[in-house]
Length: 247
Picture 1 (tube, rainbow, N blue to C red):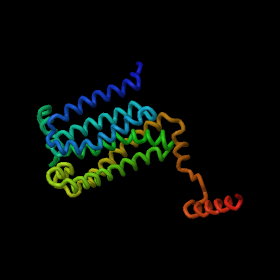
Picture 2 (cartoon, helix red, strand yellow; picture 1 turned 90 degrees about the vertical axis):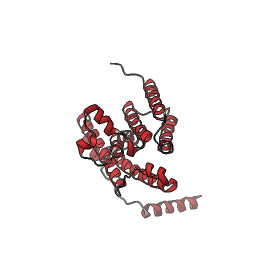
Picture 3 (tube, one colour; picture 1 turned 45 degrees about the vertical axis):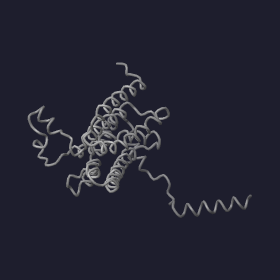
Picture 4 (spheres, rainbow, N blue to C red; picture 1 turned 90 degrees about the horizontal axis):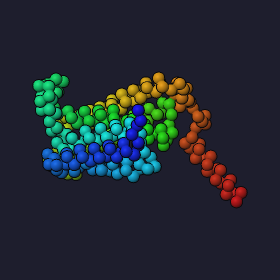
């Protein structure tokens, strides 16, 4: 079966997302919160568009990003703490998701934090492999680490936004729903999702790559036996002084 061209695939995803975005931009529950939720989306899409020609991502990475952004736009439309997924599940299955899982709060935001790790860790890995040329252990650890750190940064961004805007907008955007450990739970969910994603990726590569074990071992091998830090600074300083005397 012949794959659709990369350019056409990106165009198709872009058009579908634009349609979904326009649809969900109509009468959101809280317009100001919707705008705030879309700030990072606009920045991210601008980054993807501006780097497309020099650094086009794979179809798999683009699909994962597309799914995440669509789910985020649903949260932005209703605000995360008020997404009516219980009403949807009752209409489809006759039971609310909260009653099925024993939840006491609206957990759409928690699900999205988990999916942030599941869906975006692989595209992050692709960036590390193609730009930083990481291999073996580091090809799995660094995407996990980046997902963890950006999850933490996002929680700080939420806190700062709530402090700056305050009032109902700050409360709607922060979405803690009275849970004092909300930020910590969001971060551990994103980390868990990323860990699952990298574990699945590693298992697939283990079966597909003959040199998986040797590449992993090589990535953990000490490349330079001499310490760096202050020793390297002194070494470079001495070399610079010798070069000056020669000139």
